[in-house]
Length: 505
Ligand code: SF4
Image 1 (tube, rainbow, N blue to C red):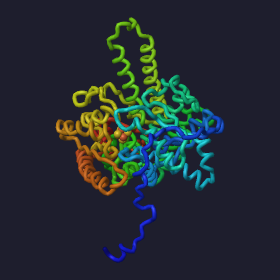
Image 2: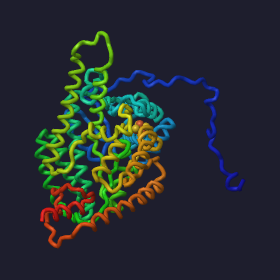
Image 3: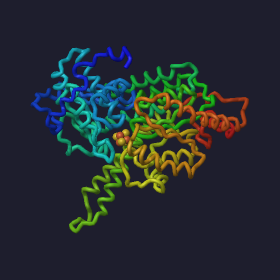
Image 4: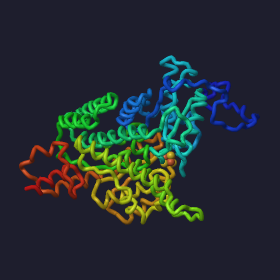
């Protein structure tokens, strides 16, 4: 042993094996002593973990309903480390990032804002989606409670709604701190839908901006306009029309050749815009790509589809006393249909107003049809059959030069099931440029280098596609307006624009 090593003094409690002689005790979720929680009017609701824009719009939307609601900051690497420090082993990244983010926020309230731990526990409450599931998703809430107790916030409240039930869960919720009424879910859905639409436009516009930073500045303005409309209960349609003007002012050069990269995979890893996926979207844009994100409504539509399928299956279960017409199941089916129609109507209305013309709400039945030869549709959990369907759709309909499926390390539905199936899909569609990639919280260098390798092939494909089109001397000014969104058999934006002009002549 070197001199420097032998001089190291271990702390007194290093290697403390005191637990060896202690009787193991049963873990309990509830606090050991009764806590006098603050009444609803004094309670502050916390949540977060969607895209940056959606978190802020949800904050405004829920505050407009009279609750005091705060969106947590975007989870970063420090949040991940905190989550790992207080969480159980073997959880998936989204748990570590989101649990750690909550713990850090409470520590910030205590250590920097000067609130006592008792006050934080009494007054604050965290809202999250819960539910059971074939994967670790079913354990999230217990994981939050365990980490919070170990971090010194035992008794901190977590309230959840079942992500599979959406607006239909009202009566079964015991905790009434938040009224999970249809109004709550409709307002929430509007914020999510509008956030999806503005995010998708942002990803279409930013890669082609002439002056760096102008798209982000315009998006920040749109966020303020829509948040204000929620808070003041004014027309969201009028707000979207105002946003259209703001986005139109961003100067673009859309004839730059850029590969289109579809990003999909496990819901949280694919959607987050930060350290949770090593800032994948910003990395791809910096490397010269245009991203196609999967909007959150995809997940919402999948949940509605799963609810519909399970309802249909229950109806055909054998049962002697089954009535000729089961009205409860009929009612559920009608509610699901109404939910689907409402999401589609609102999406179309807002999208057309702001000028997103080339995206339709996904038809999960059609996607299921694409996937069913490869993926057992009854197999739910994670994104179910959607990952497989997205890849087939991208190849069949020429949607992207590269499809990246991103997932947390060891994600059961995404890594273990979907990626296994994708090897058969890529064997049958050898033209697919597909990269499946895991995030582990660490290991960014390996992640980036694999993305760069796949991107190289995508750039070549985008270049060849563009060069094969006859160039025209007179390019009309409208090609640089984001509102012009022609659809044809070309993948890249520049190639599709050129192609549309030559067809017009
Ligand atoms: S889908 Fe994957 S990452 Fe998400 S909770 Fe399940 S196992 Fe974890």
